[in-house]
Length: 192
Image 1 (cartoon, helix red, strand yellow):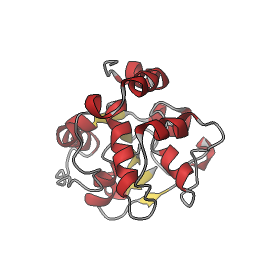
Image 2 (tube, rainbow, N blue to C red; image 1 turned 120 degrees about the vertical axis):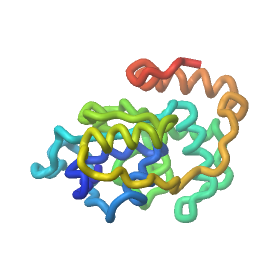
Image 3 (tube, one colour; image 1 turned 30 degrees about the horizontal axis):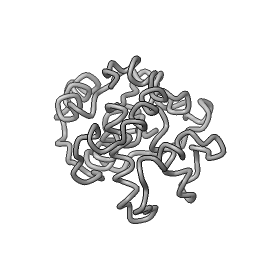
Image 4 (tube, rainbow, N blue to C red; image 1 turned 45 degrees about the vertical axis):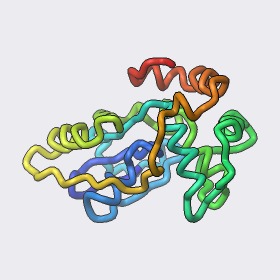
């Protein structure tokens, strides 16, 4: 989570949903707070002003795989969709507070957006990556009606994404759809 002073708002950054563009491309570097338990959230942060962005679960998965293949610090250039799914469902690999561990860090990018450790239920304003510019403007205007909406650059992209329907093997799509069922239903995305 990040506190953005200029907005007096909390940004809940879900990986691969445009968050780096928001937290690094709009205002001064916001205050970051790793949140493992709800008690980790500073009491001074305005929890009635929490916003986030979500993304189609399978497009997000494909983006995470492409991202890890090229990431400068945590690069795993041989990552496959099959191996990424194995990491996702491997309960021996944690997904929190492990930036220095490749598998843990990568799994953090794969877990369901609706996973309780993502604290999505705190968000009062939810935008979609698919409508990033328009939803950023809508959310910013709602939270800061008297401020100019800053331009939102595209940072930290995963490179050119092709259609996940053609890239991810059918069996993995089926498994991912099952794993991310709550993401699809609660966030209003159509199941494949």
